Image 1 (tube, rainbow, N blue to C red):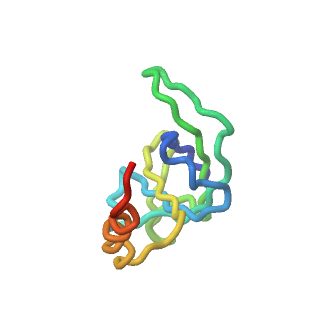
Image 2 (tube, one colour; image 1 turned 60 degrees about the vertical axis):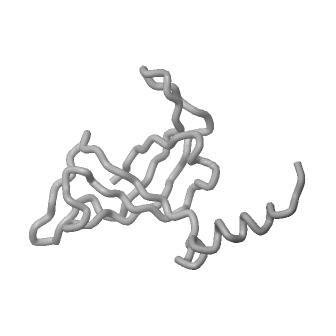
Length: 113
């Protein structure tokens, strides 16, 4: 399955082909049916402007599976269904999230601008 996604220019900096991704088909509840594991295949070289004047990069994600559910009861995915794509760009621990504001404040403490 090849999924085409739109990426905001503010979010494209850490994306690159080969990164793992999870495709969540919005017609099926992710908490029940899960998502499809995939890989970022390519990202457009330049932004594209839509009819509302908003710019985005086009990203294509290829999944190994083409349906959700089980082999006995597959849930069909048809062209035009909307999806959300989560791309894994790195990992952080809970401690990293807790310490980030403290470390940022420490780095800027006692400095003049």
